[in-house]
Image 1 (spheres, rainbow, N blue to C red):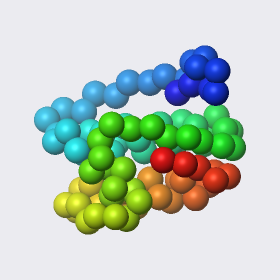
Image 2 (image 1 turned 90 degrees about the horizontal axis):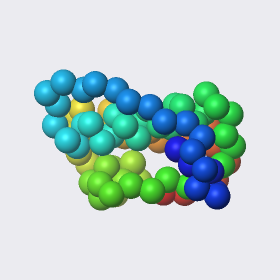
Image 3 (image 1 turned 45 degrees about the vertical axis):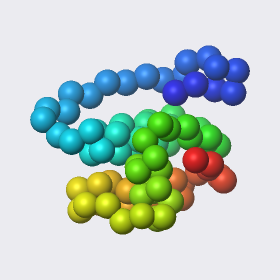
Image 4 (image 1 turned 45 degrees about the horizontal axis):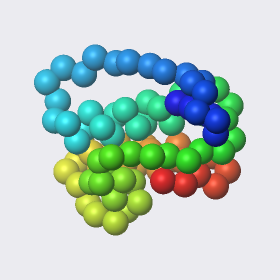
Length: 86
């Protein structure tokens, strides 16, 4: 996670064994949002390269249940921030 100047604020890793890439991308977004919330950041601009995850979070498409539940978690986390953009 970086600030507006590109300075690193927080970074993390997580071992996800044998899961589909779509689920891994959604987990990474959810974990990043949780870290931002825990850090107390009020504003977010989210950038991602997985269009399916982004569309699922924006409720533009419906995804399989594992990703659907993660997208719901992500939307719930996003509601905790002031005007987040994706």
